[in-house]
Image (cartoon, rainbow, N blue to C red; front, side, top):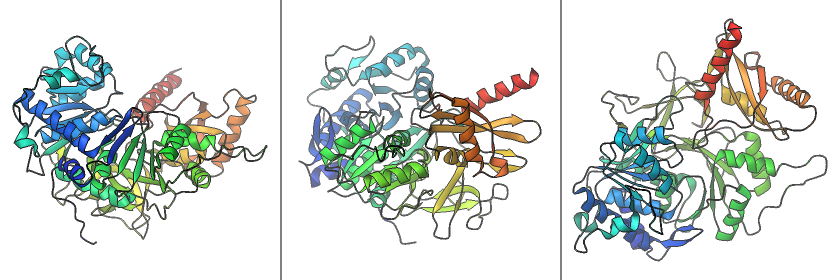
Length: 537
């Protein structure tokens, strides 16, 4: 493997470098206006000075809500520049999750929107380390009691304050924590992932290379949150970012056309809705809407969970550009694999990004397996986390630097990775391993299905049977039961005997985590309770 190189820089220096190279270039554009790289860098300096003054030391942890706004970028880099660590706070989580994140990370200052600030005020007795709550979205200065408006917090800094190290970077230790990001908690309580400057800078370079980002790129982020992978990779490459808060994917495409976007980053759930909206009407000819004029996209990029092959093909056909998927997780900063935008292999998550090694090991012996053999995916590279908060043991990274992902998959002879499922999500029917994701892909191919979810229904004889919850495109159409039966029959014709759908229900929506992944843990609990009640009846 050719040696992969990346800048030996602290994370915030990526922004400083971009501001020097292209001070007047647009860094971030939102519905309220644009911010240049120089302006963003100056704003980060101001946050760094505030935190240096407020905390009086380095090494503290600062909670920052990753809202889809340019201000997050300034707070994120400013916190790191002050020599402190960013703790990413998802503004969509509820009080219990918020308390868990802030208490586990021992957050001392929180810079969050008003709704999140209200939850923190209610929970302050359970957060003894939290000394100040700053509200970032109160232009009129009206904030909840016991919080501080952002403008007031910044104005408290004396005019003579110089900021950390003359507003240079707050650290020279590239292996120090820059950011703590919590896992989604789909298999247990969310865990705090410690990511170093080296992890994040290396992954920014890896993403920019894998996605073909450069200073002439325009990335449109159609996401509910501001994901740091998109922020860091764009700043690394000097790309112009456009943030779209409108959840309507057609509206996002119109914005992409109007802004000259070259890369469209979308959430799989939204891309599935878009694919359904542009599906041809077989009875009345092609009734699809026309793509917005002026599109200059080179790729649509999806991540977080799987986008079905059917939806991928529909979008590629409609837009005439590749739809690219990747693979990663918080522990990998987050990207490990990406399809090649020039030749995406549908159904895979692509090859490893530069500087990354991947292998698949047997679940029992932990010995690497041959190509096409299924096992647990392991990753090694500069983006692998330094560890979990509060975890003094070896954790999932072995002595050789291999990180055990908890995902099941296989490799083809070219090193392209195909994921089967999460280790905790698969179940057995008559000792055969069933992948819920694989069954879902077959069900979702039916044009009558909007979305679906699969879990195992406990069975005392076979282990577990396939239970499928299906969201129909036309839930009020006549003959609902006949439609459901037809969907199951057609899917079962394509499924192995152990994968057969044996229980099915119409549901209103697939339960999802705040980042859009199917929330199987709660669904499994509900299914197990129902199965137990049914067995006892």
